[in-house]
Length: 157
Image: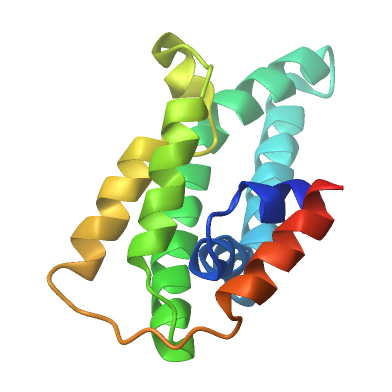
């Protein structure tokens, strides 16, 4: 977590969504799953090429094969974040709102989407909204408006 994240969140629920997403990656062992997959591909490629001139091929295969796999992990972390937010009394709609803001700030041309490891932010926001459905979440703020504004002010210094 860094001050830029706090400064760019409009409320604590947005921040909770992002933090919940990152915590989900840890709790669901996404880092280990990704490492095992990448090491496995490297071993197979090394066996096929006999270890000759495989570095470029390894990087290319890693880039092309990682996208869909990583996107599924990102989606899984998003839905887990919604579940965490519900349990903690945060409004998961705000996490979707944050993703929509990220989509409007995204300067990556859509032609390059296929190489991205993360789903597009707008797609993520829509998936979160779909996952939430018509559920109404009782919100229990942890910080008062004054406390949140004070935290944001400190983050912007």
